[in-house]
Amino acid sequence: MSYIETFPLQHSTILRIYSEREEIETSPEYQRNGGVWTPEKKQLLIDSIINNYDIPKIYFHQYSREDRSKIGKSYSIIDGKQRLETIWSFINNEFKISEDFDYQDDESIKIAGMSYNDIAQEYPKLKIKFDSFVLPIICVITNDFDLIEDMFSRLNEAAPLNSAEKRNAYGGDMVKAIRDISSLKLFTQKVKFKNNRYQHYEIAARYLLVETSNYENSKLIDTKKVYLDSMAKRYKTGNTKLVENFKNNVEKIVESMAITFINQDNLLRTQGIMVVYYLLFKKALEKNITISRIDLQNFDDLVKNNRLKAEKNYEDADFELLEFDRLSQYGTNDVSTIKEKLRILSEYLNL
Image 1 (cartoon, rainbow, N blue to C red):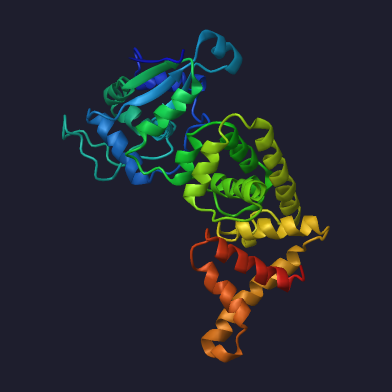
Image 2: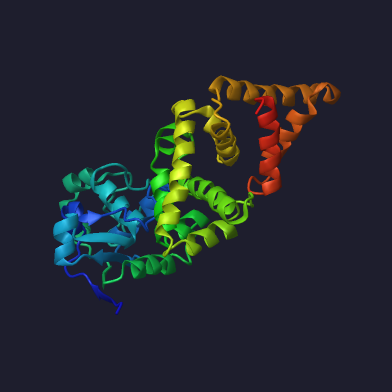
């Protein structure tokens, strides 16, 4: 029978947690990525701690003794990753306190604009106070990993999680396939947009949706949130082999794309073109045709130059290229938009 229990972590001072940070897994699969806090938000957290304000609870998944020996970690973060990483980066002198900081307990102490090391040298007692601040850490013990993912999703329901982050918390076979695909070279080296809010996961999910909709309906469907979420839930369990087949199909096409595109490719600067390129390479593989990056770059240049031409004299511009450009400015998830862009690009490449 599944169970979940919670209890406060004892002696959870900042210094103790910092000293044990190697035992803490900061990026379990259900987590969203760090690195999205602004400098001002980081400074506000340190301000709150030094001035002894309450801060939101941090949740740890505490591993069993058996799991600890296998994983080499004692905990993983369910919620509070950005808070912990902010505290650790402050201790590592990676940013300074705000220039307008006021220490409320003693206005004669001026630490505005100081780093952690500056405080240690100028006000050692204040540094000790900071180190001794007790973080409100709640430990979670469970025998069902899905309950951890469910808890993470519930804790963040009031926070601005995007669709990919919420979907990642579902767990299961399809979500694992999404993660696996997003770790391939196309995403780690070739695309120009980052994965701070799981943008790579979103594209990987759309690629898998192309394969699942082809299997289920023999046609392409909208790549909107409702269909991506439905796919992740539908293939969560019970279809492991089928999901593996979908993943293998995607991997073949993604590997072909990775060969064609260069690192940090400007052609892959936005998410909007990614599904069109996927379908293009899928068609090329079926026809045993090699797609040249030069041809794709030439097409991209034609679209840009045609736009400039239309601004000067609309009648001289190429309508098909204008239509491709127009569709690129609108939603990229409608199947009609995807198909039309694919048609125009395919005809240019004689596919």
